[in-house]
Image 1 (cartoon, rainbow, N blue to C red):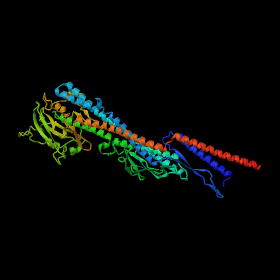
Image 2: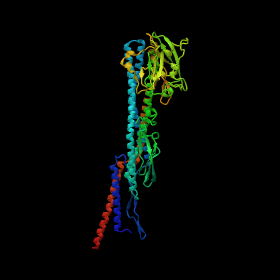
Image 3: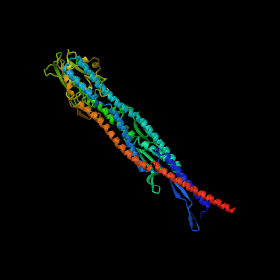
Image 4: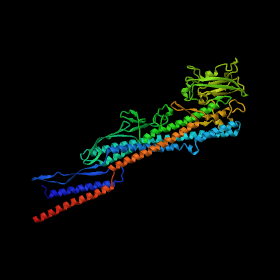
Length: 615
């Protein structure tokens, strides 16, 4: 049976328990504004009773644990919501930045440039010999090509910036993974002694997890998820087993950390790919598997599929890469179609720039916009009269100079044929012009010794050959990165011609250029597909896509922000600190402390009385 000293110890246990409770409540209040802090609760149990002579008397109170009020499943939902919100935040900001480079709704930009460009061709068609009209046309064409280049450069700059940020983000991800592994090691050390709880370290790990989830989608598995209704109804994490995977690859395994590797050495564009690496150095490309968060948004915007030998090492997919590709398709079609028409203007000679093809290369393998069909070589005399015409055919095996599978361009052009059907072998196309293809890739049509004031033109019938190889150029370049007006015309606009046959009053080329804006043209994608649209319609579709993507990203952001706020409120209602509740607890524990102190004071007085009797 308990004696006075036993009762004294009972009071002392209450005093100590109240002191621990006050300290824990104070910790909660002090961290009320700490978003990563999980409120803690002290659990008490009665100390074993002392029994004797048929009577059991309690021996006080014991602090059994200090636990975190945490729900792992709600926290997992918060992680997922943070991943989605971070993805939409980055996507929305980046796409709005891209959209600023398409100011067409403000009566500016490429759409207006196209209108001005075709207007100047129309003006030239009305007065084909006016120098002022040629100067105005050159200026309009230069503005159009310059704006296409600058817009593409700006978009590529955003894409390049994302690629650079990707490296910094992977460094941050690896730093977070290493810190999580270190925290796991500390938790294991502290909790190796039964009864110890590394609450603050688990809060730190949750903070690191949540930060990591904003970078990309992660999968976390913890060895023990338990529920103790005597403490709290929520499911909480316990134990020291811990597994964190990224795209199916182990990233953190307990206290072991497996960093991700980012590398661009094999890509000509210097764009990064991301790998997991196992202990023997074997790498697995995760670039196409990573999803969610800031990094997932980066990859979806920049592009994921990269092959060193395709597209110059730039991505073959990605939202921003698609914009670049579409601008390239727009520029390519403008260049090709304009030069197709301009090749109809008779010249004394024609020569292409250096082509990146061999004599035996199939033209359709080298150029995605050369089609089956034919084009005509037309020779005019000095009075503008057509004197000879030869049809050149192209199929999928036609090359510049190899006749293995079909007659090459050179063979067809230089073959002696009776083009005029007059049984005269000295007045045909091959008598006036000779085609050559040099080792450096230059194709040319040069006058022969029989040529005396004759000119030549190429009239395309759907092959795109004249425009694709640039045998007679108004625009130079191949895509949006290098489209430009031919330097010769920029220096002296008066040199350009609006005629087909070289006679005064012939405005066929200028008229065809005006009609070009109304024609349904082929726009060729990098993957080999094509679509038919007018020039203005194709560009309008591009700008509409940009605006729609930016709007959709903004809408998705608003939705996921609301969802995140809802889940965060739920999480805080479980794990967050309610200061009013904690203050009420503090008053309760203060009262308990005072009561326990009163027990000790009472026992002390009883002992003094007992000692006084003895004296």
